[in-house]
Length: 420
Image 1: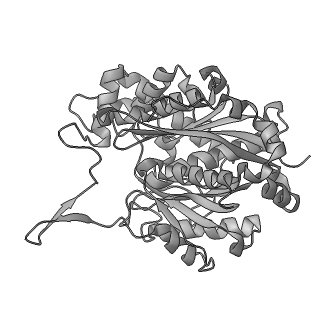
Image 2: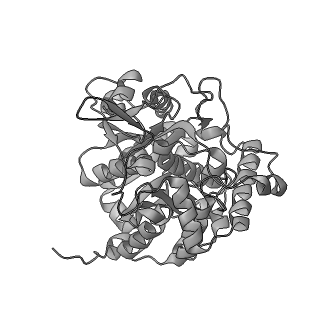
Image 3: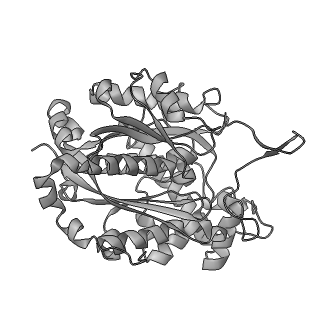
């Protein structure tokens, strides 16, 4: 089997022409919504994962006006659940017809983004035309997990194993320290970046930038994470959280969170037909262009997104310069990993996460990748509604996420105008 990386440059370059010829297999994200992110043990502490996902599913069905019987499948990513099929359970809880099967995806932190990519690939393949896809996490109600010994006794564990112990399977915080040390990311840079994320998120909340994408739930109408009183002096007082003498602290790390985000993924043909009845922001959607997943050393798990982006660019024939002027949403599990990925790719990290990222908003593992797509769609729709030139068709948007075990996932979308 050849190990050569295929070149998809001709496919990407001919994107507009391909859509004109075959809009039935051009996948678009028509609509995306998310719950306000809650702190673990907070507003959603009494709700299980499927209940959180169901709340967003119900909202999307009503807001989009789709006939539930037309949905081909519901694809949901989840990381800390107890197994089973949370997608099927969420679909039934949301009142969808029992003929809709449900598929659950586990790529850990990348699960929500992977679910959306999978739905888009299904549309591309002609296997279906209408999907609900995204992710959910309830750290608050995640089941206790244990290995069963030969004598029947149970050995409980906090997290799953992602890599052979002899090669290294560090906890995420230790890995963030590994990344900071390996790539020379200073405490000062991490603190500055984390503070900027909170500042952007606080300003976005005050300006109503999140309002249109949020589904209020359990009395929560805004994300709980952004901290308006955070300042450089407070940031400097946080002690190392994972390694003595280290640079990764609670201040420059994401909070544990509960949340859910889902998207309507359909064909360009169907999206155009639906836009006529929806109007408004539905006139601008995100067309799926390409994606890539890559592995890297599990001891440096935070930089997997950089390798995935490099592979995506190679496959699509794009250059990093095309990314620099694009919308970029990158999951901020730790400031050290964000800065390392930016350095590897030669990108300006201040361009990531226009309205703040997971350092401020929170990181509901299985949902976080879908949150990235929800944020990208909201941004291109806002640009279009404000009449900015860059909000017209063809605005590039990228979602990136690094995943436990040393995996990275990256996806490329592009804005498409459905209505004149």
